[in-house]
Length: 277
Image (cartoon, rainbow, N blue to C red; front, side):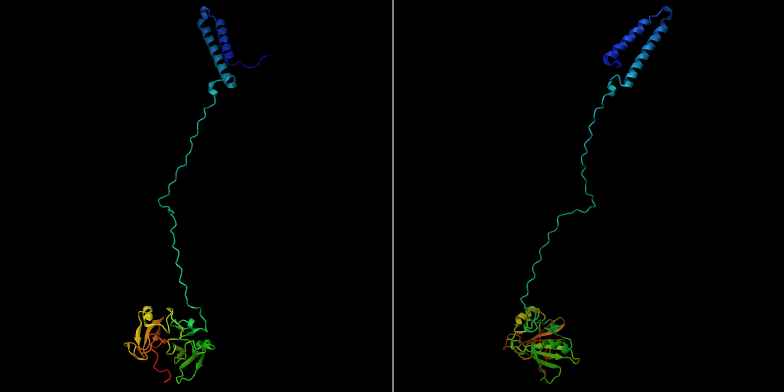
């Protein structure tokens, strides 16, 4: 026995057949016409509603209501461009930096205690000798390179003679408190090299070279710091280096064009005419 419920055309034919049977059986008599017609219509309506409702409810009657929904395309999301806030810093290209120029290499030889040519006249120092320092402590390094002479009648003046004749002589002048007040490099000779300033100037330098390096250079004589250039054997050209007088001494005018000694002092612009008199 087929228990499958009717579908499609079979169901329609069944409904039409049932309707016809009901109508045939409901042939009205004159007296009861209205009642039977109403019953027949009601029965047909119930059957139609019941069949349609039951079929749909049980899934027996296919209908377009149960059709699969048409797929809807999801709108594609495009990335929204972001704007840089007006207050945000703008990162630009790095600023190119210039390569620093190489510092010129000094041609000065490294400092050596035994070679006075490598000593510097800094104003406050002449090589290993510090002006203002205690005499014994500042001159003990000279032993082995220089020899002290006690032949001067002035106890505050000591001559130091070089063991090597190619080095300049030194004259060290003490103050009354025993500290070093002045140092003279060289002794009337422009042919012996020795300590120089940071500009590379010392004994053997010309007046033109000195004026180019020291615009404030001026002529001085012992006891006269504003003297006019003359043929005095005690004249020199003086400047100031680090607050200390540095005077380049020259022979009398017309007898030499190069400095023959350098006077460095915290007290006097020119050396005395005589150290021991």
